Length: 46
Image 1 (cartoon, helix red, strand yellow):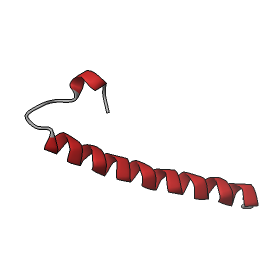
Image 2 (tube, one colour):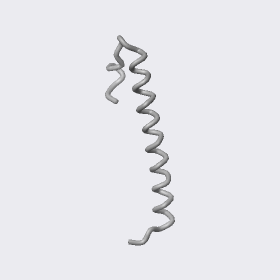
Image 3 (cartoon, helix red, strand yellow):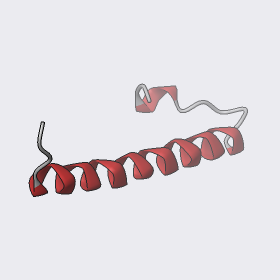
């Protein structure tokens, strides 16, 4: 079907949020590796 301006804008925002998620996952992996032998399990599931 046709692509509307709102569809492009929504996709742009979602795309940026996915990049933020990738950065957060990378940060989480780094932090959990650095805090070894301690575990962040008490904070909740990732």
